[in-house]
Length: 118
Image 1: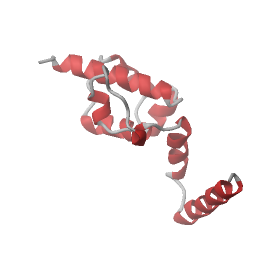
Image 2 (image 1 turned 135 degrees about the vertical axis):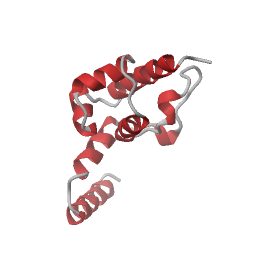
Image 3 (image 1 turned 180 degrees about the vertical axis):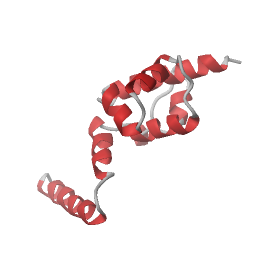
Image 4 (image 1 turned 90 degrees about the vertical axis):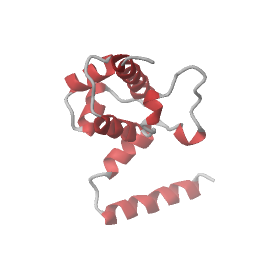
C-alpha cells in the first residue's frame, strides 16, 4: 500500500499534466478554482495535500472525473467522454457568470455555427 503522501504526489503530477494538456496556466486554473497560484503549485508538486473538495473542483474545471487524478498512469487510457479540447473548460468557465438568457443566446449561436459548418 502506498503512503498517503505518495498518492497526493501522484495526483498532483497528474493534475499538472492534465492542466498543461488542457492549455491552462497555473494562473488561469488557480483563478478559476479560487485558490492561490502558490497553493496550486504546491498541490501539483505534492508538497501540500489538498482536500478532496478542492481536487474535485480542479478536476471539474479540467473536465475530468476526480478518479482520474488517482488512476494509475500505466495502461490508463481516457475514455472518449474524458477527452476534451482545452477550449471546452475555458468556454465553460466563461459561461459560469452569464445569465440564462445569455447562455440561451450562445447556445443558439453555436447551433447556427454547427449548421453552417456542415
